[in-house]
Length: 251
Ligand code: F6R
Image (cartoon, rainbow, N blue to C red; front, side, top):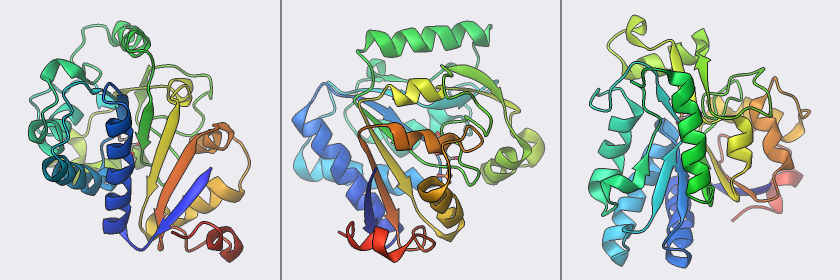
């Protein structure tokens, strides 16, 4: 894992947007795996600015998102579908048929998982997967205890994840109890992975990721075995890492 330490959330977003931009410039037909959540909001904003500034087209880019809530339509303000349009897709020239998320309203969610896996395969796999990380180490909605071999599947959300996400909903009761998520093996199949970590509240999990064991109780720990992972983390997030580990990696 390559660690890039940056000053703060803003610098993390700029560095991440540049990283994604370089991928698209080099490979305009890239398949990007995308994430939602607070961590990536700034990255998408910077990416939109870069696209305008550098007149970069996303006409041929295809995207697949990590996850979606079960029971929410793409028009629901709290769906990840809506989040992605609001924060990225509506502001760049990616054609609507080129971006994909699991369908939260699928009649048979298990079949939707199968369809999503096949879709990713038919696109030729993911070239670059963007990830955030939960305080408990989850990636996508893969909560602690999820098999490292898992493929796209339906998950029951833990109370801690529902509570963490409740800030986006009118009340905790309205946070869905299930989601469809790419599995850990699906994520690990990506050719490259970019993990973004910012804030003091993520320092503990980043420390565990670095010094803890490879353990299904910490889903993100599997990333240590991937050959091409870049972590962009801010100073608060790396505050519990060893100085020696940081100095060689400082940008
Ligand atoms: C979102 C996702 C989640 C988030 C994680 C961190 O698509 O898959 O794993 O990346 O929950 O969320 P934030 O960025 O809100 O701290």
